[in-house]
Amino acid sequence: MKTDDYQTVRIKKIGSSVEEEFVIEVEGNALVCFASNPPANLREGSDCLAAFTFLILDDYKISVSECDRPSSLQRRGEGFAYRIVGQLLDGQLCACGFNFRDEALETEFAYLNGKTISIDVDRIDVDFLK
Image (cartoon, rainbow, N blue to C red; front, side, top):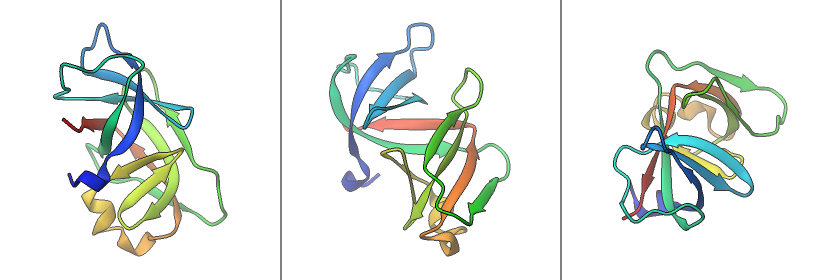
């Protein structure tokens, strides 16, 4: 990841039963995400720099909104899966203050640039700047 892919976030909660689980907050919006290799010095309530990507296990399920639909993050179940609604800008999906990078959005779906899209993801990953 490039340094400018990182944004300032607040760590709301660090998972106790699943140590890779983090609840991250941006602009009052919370997101449950997965951190495969978090730095040891992270503490609840602290601010840090983080970058977000997502994991899709099967095919990309994207729909385009014809009207200006508000962005949203809808958690599906108790895991890390979400339905994200946001604006696609230069390969980055922007929703509720979070910016998600994804190579397929940059290449295969570049023709949707500037559109509001909805996408189902199996997991949201967070990478903390060390």
